[in-house]
Amino acid sequence: MRRAAGRYAAAIVLLLCAAWSGAAACAELNVLVRDDRGQPVEDAVVLATPKAGAPAGRPTPEVVDQIDKEFVPYVKPILVGSAVSFPNRDNIRHHVYSFSPAKRFELPLYAGTPSAPIVFDKPGVVTLGCNIHDWMIAHIYVAETPYYGKTDREGKARIASLQPGEYVLRVWHPRLDGSEESTLQRLTLERTGTAEASWRIKLKPEFRARRAPAAGSRGYR
Image: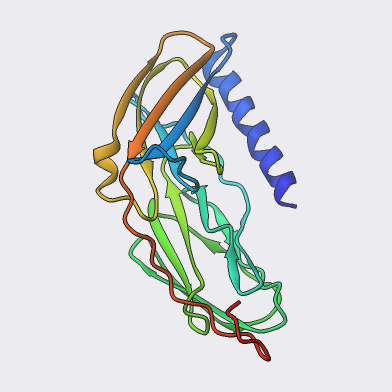
């Protein structure tokens, strides 16, 4: 289902690109994010905002799963206005919540999939938690621009279907030591093709609550 939604979103962006730029083809941006030691940074959200203002993208249905007492994915970028479902695929109940200013909500103890998804109608970072399992943390980045990507284990991301023009680029990561504004770069796409951008960012030390020990086990799960 998630792959189908991703293909649908990509098709929508391509159609919008063709509508905005007429006969002109669209450009793409390849991104590399590393930390201050030169190591690749996974789960960094990279955004490209046109100087002329971001076009109105079309939100698509999104999903954040709960699998083995963890949110999956850990970081989820979405377009503002998107509706997110929170299916619980565990055999126990979860209580999902957020106190973030961009979206405050609660899904009291439940199993399966809540009947109504949550609409994220304000841009910003929304941190998720579970009231039962303290180590369950995840982040939804609600973007005001349809041009965004998330880095993989190699610190790489790709943003496709960009129109030629001026862009402001920025990076966010849950452990970013500093503000998004400190990562700003400016890029001009004068013609179609592929552009490159890279960052070296400083990360705060990682801290997460330890998982509770599994029944009948001495270890932590």
